[in-house]
Length: 54
Image 1: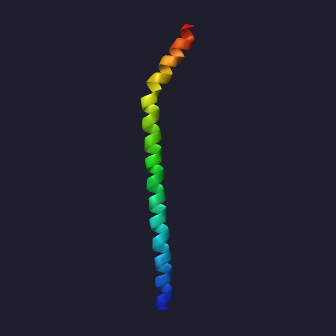
Image 2: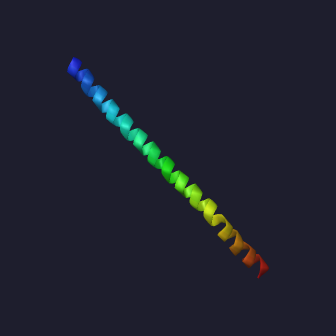
């Protein structure tokens, strides 16, 4: 019974570790995307003003 409990605990730990890693990866991707969008926004705005002027 004790071994069975440890197997479940081990699986749970692996799942939690994987979940945390996945969440961190998603967060990092989101941060990179936001940063890129903020950096590229002025460029898009310049293009928009050029189109409006034409």
